[in-house]
Image: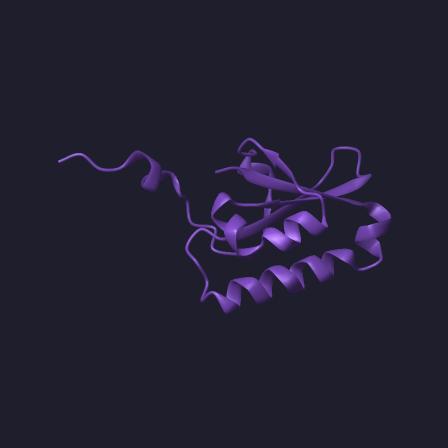
Length: 102
């Protein structure tokens, strides 16, 4: 499963498009009782010309129409240190991928 990224121009961000994205994501999160690992993050591009919105792999199945509507692109795992949580469960998912040994 992949992370997804939505690119909003500065104009789109300033005109309230981020509020719309947030609202739809939050509604999906609440409707599904806050699935573990479902989260949305964001950050400005280095030059400040656009705002990137990232969704975790565990979000995908809950927000497919949103990802399609914004032409989200699949990406490798972003550097989470540079991202700010917008909404959702930001718990680290690495434990579920590694597993446990007795």
